[in-house]
Image (cartoon, rainbow, N blue to C red; front, side):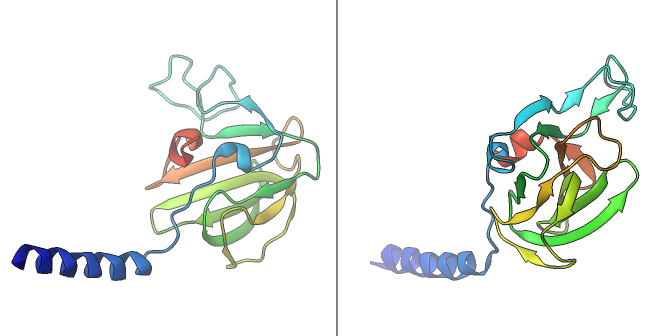
Length: 160
């Protein structure tokens, strides 16, 4: 009986705590841009435009996944978080979604934004549309996940 009471109490505490945790739902890479084709995966690459990485045999790394799709196709958030919009000469128009203090997901080369600065977004919400802004060779979205400031494979992080 005592064990049942302890278990019941622990269950109640766990349920209350679980309700306080924000959504950790993660949509797979395929849901970010419907019908997109992965034109460049995450990891070591021979493309010299990519950042230097001494650990790669070619000394360059692609820090995200490129999703090629027609101009104007909707780009969806893979997670919940707070959206920040901006422009960078290399990334072009981008939306960064901060899921928490250590995880940032970037959606780069957008033609247009569909969210406002500081807006709370949900998984599946439209963030913008596919473009070719910044340093882009054609219409695509560069999807990048940074954990503690370091890029990680988006497919692995999102569970694709």
